[in-house]
Image 1 (cartoon, rainbow, N blue to C red):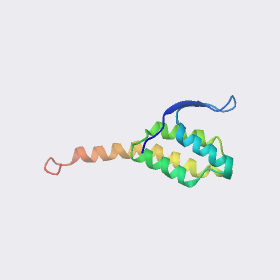
Image 2: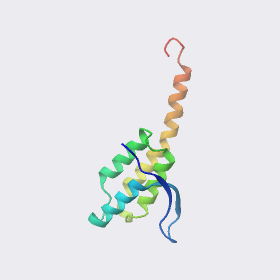
Image 3: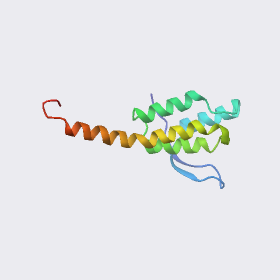
Length: 109
């Protein structure tokens, strides 16, 4: 899967600019909001998988979620906040796995 370019994004003067937003996901979210007045669950799941499987960097995923979250109403932001919490846990999980690998005896590696 080819991921579109990541650019800096500023919605307007009332919202902060984000460092690296994946425009493919942001445009899909805008399209969903325009037609259905909500962000599709599948869109967020695909974004999550792209971050977990490293097709998209962690910081880019966080900035993209924050940009999408700014577009939806307050009652629809709960799942996005949950995803942000999960993204912030990923680096800690990777450090734990690296420590486990380093502690293994050489015969197991």
